[in-house]
Length: 58
Image 1 (cartoon, helix red, strand yellow):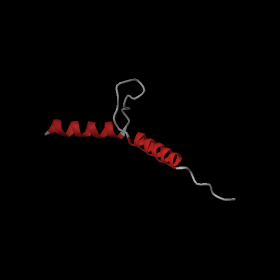
Image 2: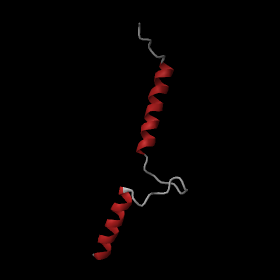
Image 3: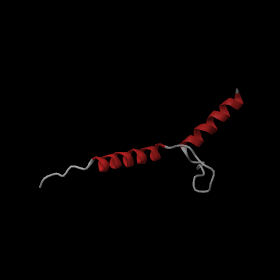
Image 4: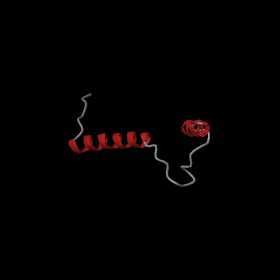
């Protein structure tokens, strides 16, 4: 079977959608709301707690 080439528009859409998904996975900004509330077990929250404790001691 021959491999069909995507038309230019479809190639662009494929690339754009792939990059959008990548961007969404890398997004770290948290918005206010119940679904995006940061977990207290999250590594970022743990790191912030440790940093806050160290700055309080200093």
